[in-house]
Length: 229
Image (tube, helix red, strand yellow):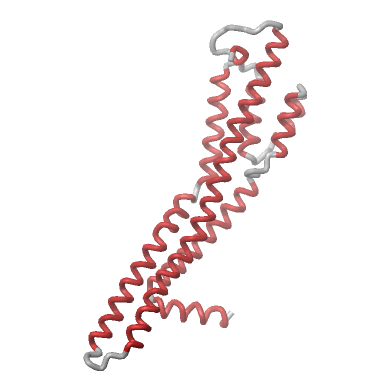
C-alpha cells in the first residue's frame, strides 16, 4: 500500500493543489461511471431478448403469457411494453391514451438512467481547464525563479519549471478523455433504448390494430380509436 501511496503523494507535490483537485475529480468520475455501469446492467439496457420474446408471444395471441413474461422486469423497454399490453388488455382502445401512458413510464425510467450524466459532462469539461490553469500558474512560477536568478541564469531552472507546469495539463487531459468517451458510450446506449421503446411499442399497437380489424371483419373509421389508425 505504501508503495502505491508514495508515488501519488510525489505526483501531488510536483503538480500542486491543481493536481490534487484533478485526482479527486478522477476518483469521483470513475466511481460514478462504475455506478452507472451497474445501473445499466441491472436495468438491462440494450438487452432486449426478454422483450422480444414477450412481443412474439403477443403476436401469437398469447397475451397472458406475454404479460407474465414482463412482470417484475427492471428493463425500461419491458416496463413500457407491459404498460401497453395491460392498457390494451383492460379494453383501452384510444391510441393516444396508450401512448401517453407509455411516454410517462419511458420518461421516468430514462431520466433515472440519465442521472449523473451532467456531473460526468462537467468533469470532462472542467478537467482540461484546470490542467491549463495549473500550467499557467507553473509557468508564472518558473519565470519568477528565472528573473530572481539574475545574471546567473541556469537553463535547467526554466526547463524544470516548464515540465512541471505542463504536468497539470497532461493530468487534466488524462482525466477528461476517458470520461468523455465513456459518457458518449452511455448516451449512445440510452438513445438506442429510447428508439427501441418507441419502435417496439408502435409495433405492439399496430399488431393490436390488425387483431381488431380481423375481429371486426371490416376496417373501423371512428376517429381516435386504436384500430382506426
